[in-house]
Amino acid sequence: MVDYLERRSDVDPDRIGVMAWSLGGYYAPRAAAFEKRFKLVVAWGANYNWGELQERRLANEGDRPVPHYWDHVQWVFGKGTRDEFMEFAPSMSLVGVVEPITVPFLITHGEDDTQIPLEYAHARYDNAVNSPDRQLKFFTGPRAGPCMPARTTWL
Image (cartoon, rainbow, N blue to C red; front, top):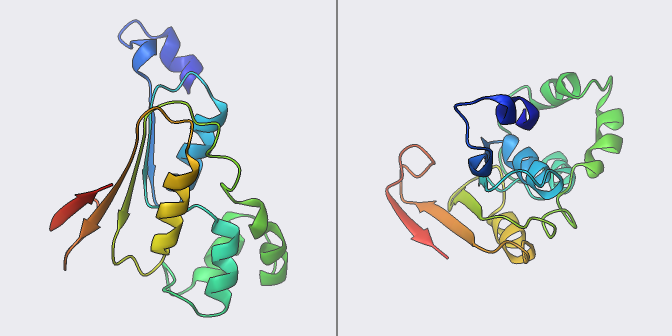
């Protein structure tokens, strides 16, 4: 993607960033940690330790994004059984990965998110120690979410 954008005459290569939400909130920081041509990263949702989260979901902690969640993730990741998926899931973690991010980093998260624990937002922020401008923004209130915040809190 960056190679393509850098070849375009209408794109300033010094202003290319990466932003994603949901599970993309896991992939965008990973991309920014290893692709040094990105100039900023925004993650909507704090999928920090997605593998650990699957263990918590298996223990019925929090909400699943879709009713057919286990079938869905097995299909998405090409795993034939839940056990096969659970063996794979721990490899999806940003523990030790956000530290190399050296660009501005905005993390947003719903204060009352029932799928991704609030502690993951704090862990991601706390460990992004090499970002020159890291910010953690919580959406709060009864209709909180990236699209319709009731009010916001910045850390």
